[in-house]
Image (cartoon, rainbow, N blue to C red; front, side, top):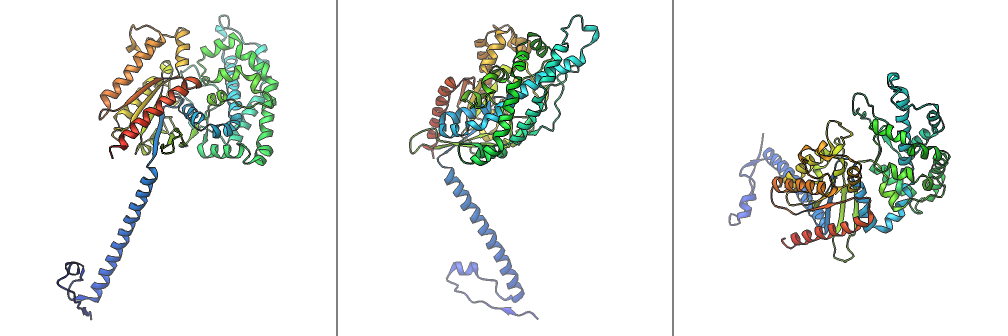
Length: 465
């Protein structure tokens, strides 16, 4: 038998009337009501906690300029980040510079092994009917392969030292007759790389560095030193260069720099320079995040720069970082007008950059974001044009314009600029710079201009709120 409970309240108090339980409420109804009220209070408390946490985050982010580095793989994003750190975080940069030795040696060895792999394929696949016309790579060249075989072990050891993982995606053929050369692409997870730096930089963990890393580096250096004359001979051989060009063997942009510097790199007391580190390529997965102080003023905002992966399989991770972004620095390698994506050889790399740029300009999440465009790899563009590569062969819309570097840059600059004008949800600021991110002197000037432009827009918006 249920008993009713009668509550009395002050009818003159409107709050008491609203919050009072229903009249003639049974004990069962009261228990159910109190349970509902407790659940409602729990949800209310959770909402309050979320609001407080969000306010704390917003307060923490006040005075922080958030920058995104975007662009396709091998566009120069990581090198741009290195330039920022070298310019605005010099002390930490110097501390970490020695940690890049393993990466630099790995870049050198991979380039040499790629050449050897191409040579092996050439010697194994020469058509007997064409031997009268083609240069014959005889036993003289076969000796290079035998003597330089230890470089394969060096590459494996350096990858293991860095915690590298080979790409599980198979490399596609560029054409039915030409197979990709070299070992599979590899990557290092950002956390693994950060841990490696922490255990090798400065004096933070000399015990780990000396006992584990240094012997591998020295052994690798000795093997490279023993084979450096053969490596130099292969690299400088005109027949090898012609074979690489004919087979469309793709070396890293920095391959020539490291191969030409092999005498300096293959000594036991080698210490990486700024230029060495800038040109060293290390593909990382996940997001790299760095905090920078770009202005010495005490009230100047801190910068937080995010370098997100540029390969096609990683671009889905860009979207979460679009929120509350102050500026996007987009790297468009304009020298790649005659190249194809490594992930999909059907796609022209310059076309892919235009597609990405259009998507960024069209994004409503980035509608009020400052856009900064680096028309990158100017040095390679100049070299290609100097060697007679015709732009309109790969870019028919270029028409009959002069095949000169300045004319090509002017044309592409306008194309990217038009995309901003016609695709942006609302008018916005866009700064365009022709760059070669390995040119530290000019990049230092460019970064100061970029910094000042971003800070002007940041302060302008701060005054509005």
